[in-house]
Structure formats: C-alpha cells, structure tokens
Image (cartoon, rainbow, N blue to C red; front, top):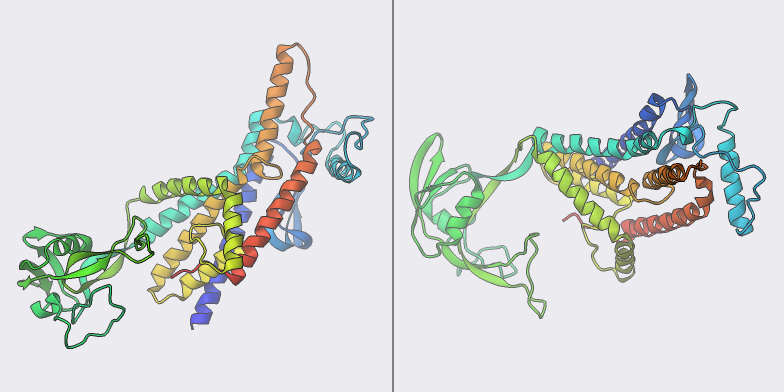
Length: 438
C-alpha cells in the first residue's frame, strides 16, 4: 500500500504540474487573443506532436516531452531589415541561429496584416508576457487558500494523545523505561489519553503549547490541572520533573556548541503528548503565506548559481542537502510521493501535496520573471526597451525602428545552455542525493 500511495502522490504532482503549465500558457493566450494577435499554436510540451486539434485559427495540442509549453504568436519579432547580412560582426554559428530565428518569425507574418505581436503598444505586450507568470501566482493563491483555509494546518490540540510512563532525559539515547527512571508526573496524576486539558495552574489554555509552556517553567512545583473526561471536569495535581531537552533554533533544529555537540537546557516535564488536528485558518492566512513564499523564492533565485554549486558539492560529498534549496521535477515528484506515503491521515497528506503544488507555482512565477530571454521576464525587458527607444526617438523628432530581439538569440542560447546544465545537476542530485523529508 505504501508503494501505491507513493505512486499516487507522484501522479497527482505530475497532473497538477501539467495543469499549472497549461494555465500558464492560457495566461498568455487570453490577452493575446483579446488584443487581436493571431495565435497559431497552443501546445503543452515540446518535440513531436502527440495530438492536436485546430479550433478557428489556433491549433491546440500536446507534444511528447512534458517539460513546459508555448503559444505561437504571429510577428513575435519585427521583420529583418532588408539587405542586412546576418553574418556581419558575428560568428557563423550564432549568425546561423539569428537567421533561423528570423526565418521562423517570417513564416508567421502575413502581408498587410497588423495582427502581430510586435506592433502592439508596449503595455499590451507586457500584459501578454506577464499573463503566464501572473496565472501561476493566482493559482498559488487558490491552492494555498484550499490547503490552509479549506483543509487546515496540522495543529496540536489540548486533547491528550498519549502519556509517558517514565521520565527519560533527552540527552540519553533510549526510549524504553528502566526501574531507575522516575514515573512521569502526568501518569502519576492519573491523566489518560483522550483527556482534554482545560487549565494549568489556574490559567485557561486553548492550545497545547500554552499548557506546555507553563509546565516547562515550573519544575518541582505542584500544579493544579483541570481536565475534561467523558464530558465532566476534574482537577488533578501534576508536579513536573526537572529534565533536559535539546535547545532549538527558530527553524526547530537543534543548536550545537563549538565542538558540534547538541546543547541542552533544564525544563519541567509532565509526560504528555498532544493530539494533532487539521485546523482551518482564516481566509487571509493562505495569501499571506503565498506572499512570504514569493519573497523567499525570489531570494533563492538571486542566489541560484551558488545554490546549484552547493547542491553539486553535496552530490559529490554525499552531505545532506538543504531542504530549502532548489529541486528538479524529479525531486518535487519524490517529495509528493513521500507526502502521500507518510503515516498520517489522508486529509493531511492531501494538504501537503496541495501545498507543494502551490510552492511549485510560486517557483514558476518567480523563475519566469527573471529578465533574460527566453523567459517571460526577458520579453518584458525587450518590450520596455522598445518603448523607451521609441520615446527617445519622438523627443528627437525621429521614428525608431522596432527592437529586433532576434539579435539576442546568441544570449538566449547561452541562457538555455546554462539552464539545461543547472537542471541536469538538480536532476542528478534528486536521484542520487535527494532531499530528506524526515
């Protein structure tokens, strides 16, 4: 059953990612058609076409390699200047690439047809190119809202899940009780699984964290604890034992000293473990979390070369990878499978996978805004540069030619090669040194 659950998780992730890509391209398609641009193709994937159907002037379909998608707009670039020699001041290899791009663009042009992308006003071109990333951002908002408000966040409740039978210091590497271990205070007080903690030391508690904080601050003190059992309340006395626990940082990771040893602190211990439940959050929590994630992913993108290098180094040395580092599709699929196979309620697993899909859409949004061709952000920069060039020409009483982005094909080629290289590193790392979920 675990293997089946893993495969189901991977399948859900693949389908969700395909839908995200499809909607990204819809984000380009709709404003392009709204502004009157002829769209020849709407395709999901690359390579040979598996299936397609023409509706009006647009061919819709799927291609063999599900690694992205595209729409083919008429006149993405202006016609090449007549008589220009593409080989001038360029290597023959890059000159051939530029000419091939111009030839492909020329095939989309029809004489006396103004329904071309490059003739749109600058703001319309920007809207068309930002439509895809914005669609991913909107999808991330929706998925986050479903995950945290529709389903909920796993939260510890005031209901007791289990009661420890003895006190074992955290610094001792064992879980079984011995005759030398003192009886856990909660067990000695008669607290049972299923009891609901109402108050501790006269202070009402609404979360288990509040109860735990009072207990940890009162080692050796007799605390009255009001519990609810079978609809009736009763008061028991719990005297927390003094024990040690690992000091943790803001991310919940153990703090280590200069020698690498885990640091411990002395706290009160009662021996209670709380039940967890999915608690729906207010509707604004999802969007807030999405905005915070956008900032975090943007920071990762600014450090992408360094992150890729670190990932490659971890792959070679076998060191554990940064759980907040970049992933390939393989890594994301693996995480989805592990989320689906983990020993948890089904609804909690669904919540985790939806959250992962939201994170992937945030990554697609931020990544596509990088101002380099062939990414959407690169096309936005070209459109803005074209508008600035024309504005300066008008001030000088002249008419500027449209910016010919085919000249940037060599830069695009270099970017694509780098992206393929980084993707290859992440792919190998996700296969041979994957991020550990637990």
